[in-house]
Length: 142
Image 1 (cartoon, rainbow, N blue to C red):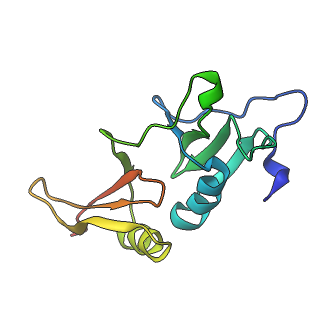
Image 2 (cartoon, rainbow, N blue to C red):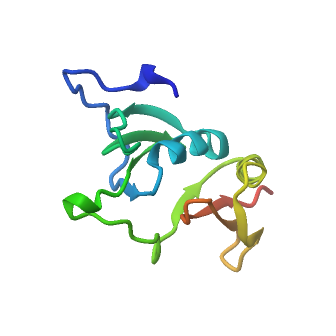
């Protein structure tokens, strides 16, 4: 684990990028952050240290120029784990073949094959081992 990204005692806030920021509750948030580094090129901007149960209350990632936040469930504080559903994380990218291959090679499961869609862009959808759906979209180069 790269502790250089850990927040310090002063709790200096990292710049949040994006107008709407997803905050994902995942079982194994630190494992997910490390996975996203490999699968999606994520950068761990900051995080709170894990507790004696292996949980962390906050991780701030940068993925594709935007902030994504992660945390573990804390059922003992009224925040039990809920299965990710009814949303998809959207990645508008330029080099969709690169992004797609990296995600699939890292173990994401293909949900919708990468293809040219009726709206004219290339699009595909994968699901990570934590249950989160990720869609990729890019204009068709012509």
